[in-house]
Amino acid sequence: MTKRQMQHSTRGIVLWIVRMSFVLGVAVLAGSSLAHAADGTATRPNVLFIICDDLNDWTLHPAGHPKAKTPNMDRLRNRGVSFTNAHVVVPVCGPSRKSLFSGLYPQTLNDYGFARWDTVPLLRRCVPLPLHFRNNGYDAYGTGKLLHEGAGGDFYTEYGIGPDYGPWPWQGKGSPRNTPHPTQFEMWKDYLPVQMHRDLNYGPLSNVPYWKSDPAKHIPGARGWYTEEGKPFRYKDDCDRDKMPDEISADWAVDVLKKKHDRPFYLAVGFIRPHTPLYAPKKYFDLFPLEDVQLPPYRKNDLDDCASVLRNRWQWGFKKYHALIQAGGETAWKQWVRAYLACTAFADDQVGKVLDALQQSGYRDNTIVILTGDNGYHVGEKDCIQKWHLWDESTRVPLLIYVPGGRGNGCTCDHPVSLIDIYPTLVDLCGLPEHPNKDRSNTPLAGHSIRPLLENPQCKTWNGPSVAFMGIRDGKTNPHFSIRSNRYRYTLCANGEEELYDHDTDPNEWTNLAGNPKYSKTQEQLRKTLTSILRATDVPKGYETNKGMGSDKK
Picture 1 (cartoon, rainbow, N blue to C red):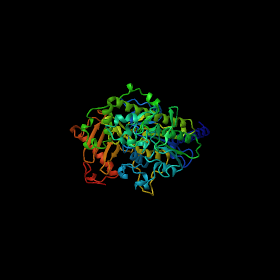
Picture 2 (picture 1 turned 30 degrees about the vertical axis):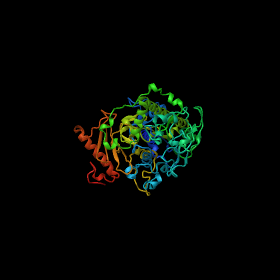
Picture 3 (picture 1 turned 30 degrees about the horizontal axis):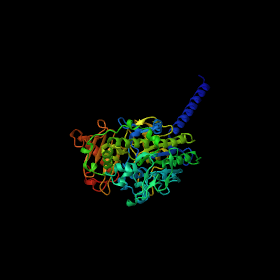
Picture 4 (picture 1 turned 90 degrees about the vertical axis):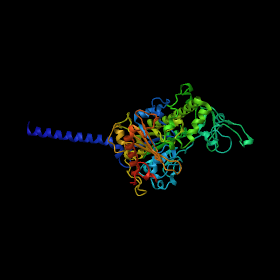
């Protein structure tokens, strides 16, 4: 080979290397563009965040459970990553949402209840998720039930409607929200106080309520459906009626997606259903003929081996279940399950409207989509119709995440994750500043980005914990805490009682193994894991001397 030929060949190799380096560089940038796009440009990813109220894990279609019909959630699941072991931080709507949107644990906030965001001292000095987007070049839109109380200050650029659980029956006086349906009132009246009937209100909108006047009881009487403010909700038939709040929120979100946006956007949609009252158009009830409805897995006397402080707390849910059974037996229970399934199907249809609008927009290839619930829900399991508990029925929720071009799309991930991880995950994916509370409360986010699990759902080396952590508190008592690993649930109660369930052999948490010598090492290790999480955040008062905590309080 001549010298000139060698130079030409060398030059060709160099050019090839440069060209390949450029191609590989583009590929790497494409894989990480969601996190590192230039600040404030249209190339940064948009976010569509959808949360449904009281949406339990039936949408994951677990074996042996009632068969939910959720084709729109299913198509999102097939497109993105489905986290099958995702849990809320607090298994009740108000505090769950505060932890999700603040990225902080309830023990850090010292709040497990329904206090408004602006009344919690630490939250007043923290930046909520939508405002962090607004502060960094995004427009933030929201509608429906996001925080329990609604929009929350100036968190959003624009907000649609606030939380609205209607329509309701009405007696013509007082709050419609506290009125039972007249056709059901006789069924429950001997078992529950009137104000609790609303959680057992269920049925198709075609079952139009009519309360006769009763001067002796000072009841004016009313016919038809009403809003929460006592205004008439027009209903002629399912095709000729006012829109339900979730339908209004879906339409509002669709309008946002149809607009031209010069800046990236964060759009959050909070659907009410399947929260009670379980009213929906009749066509959704028709999807579930009563004779085909399957009851959830159930074990008689299931509560007997549970921690006494857990089976004796928050009796509302237990009373509702027993009232249902005493009033109508298994048939009434099936009716309630049917209504929950119908309202879940109704919510799924609203999700579908929003997903369709995104798919038909110019934003479909550059929008991250997240769908989840604010807590699970017992529908008869452990003799309970309610949330508020540290068992899987209350804490486990669907978590579906689609990232355009994500390598894990179409897969499932069974690693335990928490909704507290959503804030840092979006920070990571969208390239936002990692410390939103800097120069305010200076409180770091408690969760971890699950981006490694989105890229490889079987990843074993992400920097987050091996368990999902959650807690609950009644009033001003000390809280109870629980963790969920791949295999186990371990719970440490405020009085030192413990629960341990092995999901490999007991997926319904029917057998409490706490105190079983065969599981003593597992129980001890999980107790240490739980308490280490507490020490890394804030140990509630009294826990420094509780079982497993020792004396080395943070």
